[in-house]
Length: 373
Image (cartoon, rainbow, N blue to C red):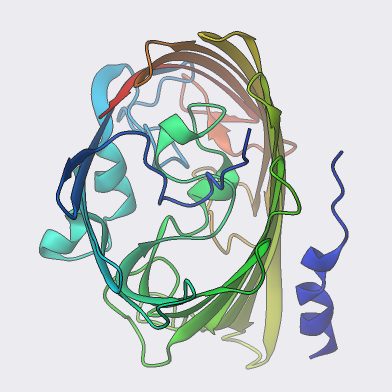
């Protein structure tokens, strides 16, 4: 128990960092809309071309759910976002298609595979912004969502690719002060729509805006991961802390650190133990002029017991670092053309080279054109 308490204290370490900052770690942003009475309609199309210099034989990039195809033009994510809003009731329906959907929703059944979000909400207080929303919701975890236009680089970090992009359940939104908002979640589990076990899971999110330039977000998750696929798994504990800093329209920065513990039964000894993983990433963008930006990201991801990532090689456990440079060309107010170079490197041989042999490095070149309306 002490180990778990100490783990959840991780994210309470102080984080100090010297235009209104927005939480692009959540999916409720909208930059344009067609308004018909109380209904708003938005849309987004993300096309891409990626070339992996290790040249995977099946054309699927390893360890990726976002923009995962090699050497072909494709659609990562395209959706229509329909929102209904009145004083005491709201609803949102976001159906989507694309290779991201094919990769990330593979475990879902039937038409559930195409739900980016689908939820309804009721306001509990006419004077305060206290809401209860239920359904398929955008995940609060990490400083990246699946919506690439909102982020400083095009590709998603290992942090986001290996934490929930969506959750299913109910969320209570409680404004504590004008700077602090709390969210409490009751969930079916860790990125799942159809529950795979009886116990429900829970999450807590605190979003703090000390001023209009800085946002600090702290998330915690706890729930049972026992299922037919993982019968030896018990409770999962996860804590995630990120900040977003936007001092002006020319510079943006964000960083995220998280760690998890998975309770697991040893099938031989019959004893239980906690197996952990953790990551850190930081990135920044400098706008060279209003229509041109240059971004950089460094990350490190370590999963020594393969709780979330099983290597495609003979390596025991998974760990990797990556560095990325991304050039953004903003086309008007609703389009971005991007080119990103990303270098993966590891102390373990977790990649496969062109000959299909184990390797400790990989290089990716990615381009994208995103339009939203």
